[in-house]
Structure formats: C-alpha cells, structure tokens
Amino acid sequence: MNSAQHLGTPLPVGATIVPGTLRARLEELRAQGAVLNLRDAVAILVPVAVEVADRHRRGELLFLHPSSLLLDEHDRYRVAPELAAKPPTLPRDKACLAPEERQGRPGNARASVYALGAMLYELVTGLPVGPGMRRPSEVIPNLPHDLEVLLGKALVADASHRPDDLKAFAQAAYRLAPGASVRPPTADEGHLDHDENFEVDVSLSMLPPEPVGASPYGVVVQARPVEAPVSDSTSELAALKARLESDPRPRYVVIREGMDHGPFTAVELLQQIASHAFVESDVLRDSFSNDERPVRDWDEFAPFAEQSRLNRDIKAEKEALERVVVQESRSTRGKAVFGLLAVGALLLAAGAWFITQRGQRSDEIAVQRETATDIDVDGGLNVPKSKRGGRRGVVGTSGGYPILAGGMSCEAAQAAYVEEIKIGGSKGPADITGGQYGATLNRGSYFAHCGVPESMSISICAAIQNGRAVGVSVNTNPRDGRIAGCISQGVRGLSFPSHPKLDVTRTSF
Image (cartoon, rainbow, N blue to C red; front, side, top):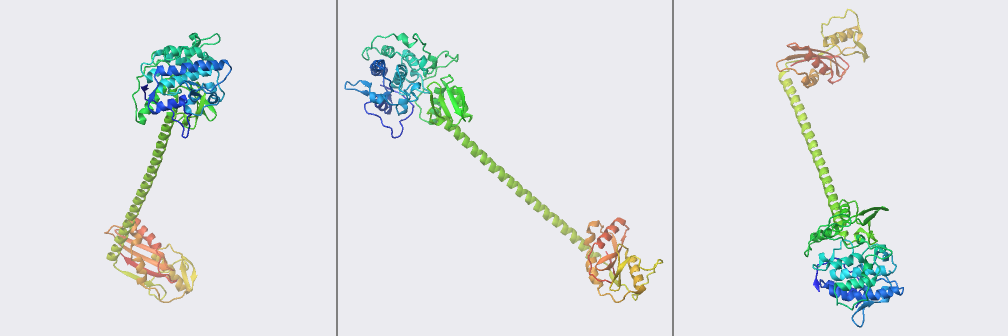
C-alpha cells in the first residue's frame, strides 16, 4: 500500500458503515492515510465486474457502490443484493453513482461501468470522483497511463456516450496488473471506444483532460507538479483552487432567483464567487454529474463562498466604521464651529463693553455743566412770540398743558410751549429735577457710534415732555453737521422721566 495525502468529504456525523463492506475497508485505509496499490485494486474489481455483468444480463438493476459490496467466505467482494437495492446515504458512496442514478433509480450496465470506474479511482487515490478531482498520476506518481485512459472512458458523465460492456472493462482492468486476479472472460476492448450505436466521448468524462498538450477544447493544459502535503487552510485552498482550475470545461450552472446562469468553467465560477455575484445559498449544478445542491454543500466550492462572505462582512464592518468616523468628524467640526461662534460672541461683547466704557469715561470727564429749566409764563424766560400766533407745533393739551408734536429744535419747542402757556395754560414749578434728566443725557453712550473725536466739544439742548425729547439742538466745536445730526437722533431716541410739563435740560461734553 502507498501513503497519499488526500482530501475529501468526511463521513456525516452519526453515519454507520456496514462491517465487511468495501466501504469499511476504504475508510480504514483512509484513517491510516493509505490507499491500495493498483494490483490489489484490480484484484478486487475484476471479479466484481464479471459478476455485475451477469446480473445485468439477467435483468437486474443495481445501485453499485462500495457499501453494496460485501466480503464472502472466500474473502472476495461480491454484490449484496439487499444493499444494492437502495440508494446510498454516505457522500463517498453517492459519488460512485452514475449521474442518471442521482434521481433515485437503480442503474443498468452503463451505470455500473461508471460505478466501477469511480471505485477504481478511489481505491488507488483515496479520493472521491467529483469536481476538482485530479488525474491518478498527479496523486500517486508512476501509475500507468492506461489506467487514466480506462477511467476517462468509464467516467463519461453522459450515459449515451459511455460504454456498457462490463466484461470489456474487466479485460482492460486485468491488463493493468496481469495475474492479480482470475482472468476474466475474453471480451472486445474496442467496445470501450465505440459500438454499433454510439461513440464514447471522453470530453464528457469526469476525469480532467490530459495534463500535457491540447485539451479537446483547444485549451492548452499545463502539467502540474504533484502537490506536497499541506497543513494550513490557506495552502489547502490554494491546492483545491489549482485542482479545480485544471479542468477547463464549462460544466457548472448556477441557479439564482429561479434563473440558470452558465455554464461556467471552474475558473469562471470561482471568479463569480469572489466577485460576490454568487453566494452560498445559490444552487450549483454540475452539468456532467447532474448533481445539484446549494453552493454551501459543495465541498469543492463552499470554502471559497465562505471566504467571499467573510470578505463581504469585513467590508461591511469597515464601511460601518468609516460612517462612524465621518459622523464623529462632523460632530467635532460642529463643536469647533460652535466654539468659534462662542468666542466671536465674547469678542463682540467685549468690544461693545469697551466702546460703552470709553463713552462713559468720556462723559464723566468731559461733562462741564448741566441745567434744567421749568418752562411757564413766570419762568422769567424772554422768548419772542411767534408772528403767526398760537398753537405752532402743538398737537393738543393734557391736564391744561400743551402737548408738543416733537421733531423740533430745542429753542423752537420752548417758544411753542411758552406761547401756548401764555394763551391760557396752567402754570406751576417743575417737579422733575435737572439731575434726573442729566442721569440719562450725561451718559453719552447714545452717540458712541457717531465717531466723535476726542478733541471735539459738544453742547446739547433737549426740550423734554412726557419722557421724550420733543426738541433737540446740538452744537459741535469744530462744527460737523453729520456728527451733530447723529447725536441729535440719539437724544431723540432716549427715554427720560415722564411729566406733562415741558422741561429743558442742557449738557456739554
């Protein structure tokens, strides 16, 4: 027996193997990491091929696989009818069935030729037939080329192009190791190539094309060295990928959302899986073997689909992390903008405070005098009367006092008020002091925006009635009409202590 590194589908959990079957022997060898040599394999299968040919000639249909072959009292494997009457349950037994048997119907002689070829392949390589399988010489060096020729014919997936002469198969197998078994009945090995009704087409074989030269598809297949034993998953995936890519035939169809896509070569299918066009839940059909199941259930393609899913998950996590970073960056920028706005507001407040304080300082230093005058007929004021008569600028009376319209100069307001009082108004002393008016007028903040230079002196006269300046006069030295108008407007916008009498207050800066 030869040792071999082999990969393949393990036994399902809880699966049972019937003792004494060829499957039990194969699993024992697999557990030891060993395979049968070619001579031992031929010794087992040649008698089986002759027996099965006789059974089919009698009209029997069989599920032929290693679990249906049982040791007899002479230590020879023979068909166990009760085991060959039902479909197998173990994955490696299923791999020995011809594609036409996958629907649950037992096979004829053509199906048994396929099964014997699959068992011969597994006996000498330790590997099952299926996608990614290698030619025997790539697994076990120095196996004869005639073995691969025989397997190429026996493993044709299309039954209409597969030979059906089991005794011709036994004859060809016997020639691989003469004397290893009882000589089979003489048969025409030419039936393994053609018959009266068909031609064997090895381009449809499950066995990959010749490793050197041109394949039947015009694709040059380079020879691949025998792979060294591998121990890590990355190397195992690389080796599996190399095996899959050694078969350039388009044979894989993917069913996605009820539609067929393909057929693809193994290379194209792996590219589609890597680009996320197909995922683990999509159904994959091998058009050669008619085996159909989700990608996740194919030992040959499931690892690549899983790797593709992991890449998608990593990409999704990365994108989610980038979104979090962007959101945090936006939040940081928002906080920075808010901070800048807060600083700007503080600077504006500080500037306003500085201007206000500067105006107050100027007011406190530059105020020279203030006066308040109570306006009535006994006030001793010598104001000329209007040539036009009474009620100039007066809009009404309140409590016997004339109410001025406003918008006048300080002098014009005095004149209008005195004239109206002399006509018949009330009189009495002012009951709001000059200090009360000065507390408002002397602040100076109302003209801080007028651009008054430090060297300019200002004189303000304000006629005040009912809490507002109804008459204002402003003189500046040096004269500046723009500044004077600006200060006048500021005075008219001030609120003073309210009283119906007209009071005049003056101040200087």
